[in-house]
Structure formats: C-alpha cells, structure tokens
Length: 130
Image (cartoon, rainbow, N blue to C red; front, side):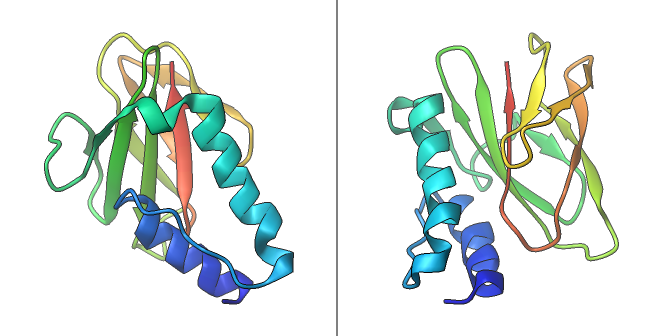
C-alpha cells in the first residue's frame, strides 16, 4: 500500500468500523495516529453508529459519515467524494460546544450543533464534538 492508497483505504474502511492495515514501515505513523485516536477517545467501548443505519448525523451530499457515541463526545469518521469540496457542514445535534479536527489538531467553531470542518478529498477525516 502506498501513502495515497492508504488514504483511500482508510477513507473507506474507517466509515465501516474496519481498521486499515499497512504493509510498509513508512505508513506506521499514519496508522499509529488512528490507533491513538481510538485509545484517546475510548472508541473500543463506544457505540458505533454506521451511516447506513444512523439518521441522527446530518452531512452534505458527497459526504459519507459514521460516528461513535462516547460517554462525553461524538467522534465522526467521514469521507468526502467531491474533489471540488474542501469543507463541509456536519450537524452534530444539540449539546455540543466544541469540535476538534483530530487529524490536524485544530479547534473548529460550532454553532447550534453545526460545524464547518475541513473535508479532504477521498481521505480519512476524523472530528470530535464535545
């Protein structure tokens, strides 16, 4: 798997609750970051809400998103299938006051449960609302 292939594999697998695998040492830091997110957010013990069953999470067209409901947060894995789009709106619902892009580490403003987040094309995107 190359770096570009890893991004695509992760984009598809993570929204299906499947951890991507790597076969090259230079990709270990990428997969380690995902493992760290699982550990930091407690995703192994969280409720997985897949996009094909969960209608509580609202996104724009060309965005496919699945989420994990944690004790005090919602973690969203999403994929952007629109090459011309670099940001998207995610409707987390009420009660969330902060959103973090877990790939870049940036804080993202949220208002009335809606945040505009970075949406890398055909790559894994991960945000956390608290």
